[in-house]
Length: 88
Image 1 (cartoon, one colour):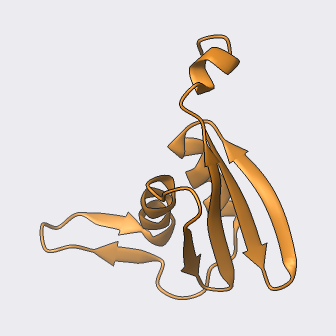
Image 2 (cartoon, helix red, strand yellow):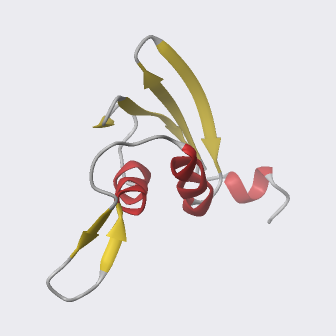
């Protein structure tokens, strides 16, 4: 489980995500400009949202990742997420 501060211009929202898939779903709702899909030499591809989800999920607490008009700052990580959710 992670807690993020998502900043766009002067507006800051605090978001929580239990799994990376939830984060990816949220990122897909945001309006990013620029390249939509990145192709690699091994003929695989990832969307910008998938790449960004990987980077954000691996951030350390107190660090941030910037993309387009957004700044994603890691506010906290909880290793006890399964316990808080009743083992789900």
